[in-house]
Amino acid sequence: MLSNLKEHPADKILALAQAFKDDPRDQKIDMGVGVYKDAEGRTPVMRAIKAAEKQLWEAETTKAYVGLIGDPAFNTAMRGLILGDAVEDARLASAATPGGTGAVRQAFELLRLANPDATVWVSDPTWPNHMTILKYLGIPTQTYRYFDNSTRAVDFAGMMDDLKAVKAGDLVLLHGCCHNPTGANLSLAEWGVVADHLSATGAVPMIDIAYQGFGDGLEEDAAGTRHLASTLPEMLIAASCSKNFGIYRERTGILIAVSPDAGIAKVTQNNLSFLNRQNYSFPPDHGARLVTMILNDAELRADWQAELEEVRLGMLALREQLAAELRQRTNSDRFDFMAHHRGMFSRLGASPEQVEAMRESHGIYMIGDSRLNIAGLNTKTVPILAEAVVAAGV
Ligand code: LMR
Image 1 (cartoon, protein in one colour):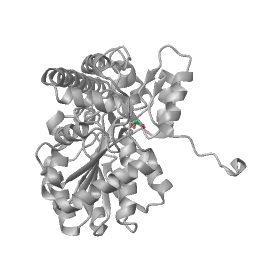
Image 2 (cartoon, protein in one colour; image 1 turned 180 degrees about the horizontal axis):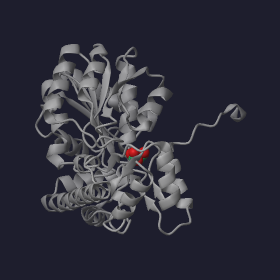
Image 3 (tube, helix red, strand yellow; image 1 turned 45 degrees about the vertical axis):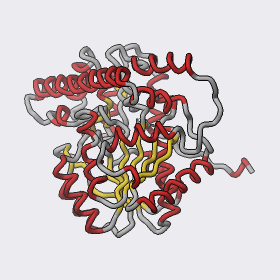
Image 4 (cartoon, protein in one colour; image 1 turned 45 degrees about the horizontal axis):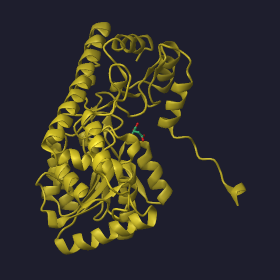
């Protein structure tokens, strides 16, 4: 049996992380995998998480199973964090999942149960794992134009032109904020145009939101998602707590479905429980419990938000510094997009050869499509990157 297996191509993001580890140079700079790092290159446990863990250790009396959708309190708290009061609770169904990837996977499985003929529309480019999961599940896909390589901004005209071809019931996958891999995001007015188009065609949006709080702020980053939720009858939301709570390895995420009415929401909820049961029974609890404690406690929540804001502003300052360095070195404003992009990622617009050259000459690791993780920098390494970019002729 096992001799029938074939090797799968390595995941590019994870392979790069390994290549970085294997590089013996001291001066190397890791701008690969989407993990936040502080100025010392550490991925700290957030203060509120540590405090909640301490409280939990003292208060927790059992590790017995919780429930197929996880703790209802986690579901309520996360619905509030993402959706605010954009949609009445009776229309919502949700289930905790192992990380944001778990939520993405369950969303696609839910689609397969609900409408096996649907096509999933993904932005070109998108997070590579979207495509591999869809392919693995045998779900038909189409891409829509998203990123203009010359301006390094959203090609909104191209996007809407491509989305003319969506059919009723198709799923249109959108990044809620901090687009991965480009860093280029829709304006609120553009979210409005997308909503109108989906409403007219009957296609269903799916939001992947993994970086809420990393772009323009917790509320601002959810504005597009909330707009769709308040205007459309149906949508799916896959959310991750890995980045904004810094609990990557705890695998904490949630899938939320907005239904047209309470009756459909009830059946959807049943399907989410069923899917969890089929795939892993109970979602992990530890990270979800910490998130719930933080969101429901005024003091912990304030401290979490303050630290998240420090992280966000730190990345914005690095973006400004990088744009300024490159403006000075190239005597042009063609890298100003660095300061306009939001979140951890930007697509630099370098060729694979230039990416390779920067790795060889300066030990700079970014994904082959020239996605860079801005949190991999600090004020001292920004000039090194700027020098490498110019030297590589980007
Ligand atoms: C990334 O895009 O680097 C992150 O979302 C981590 C991952 O799982 O790929």
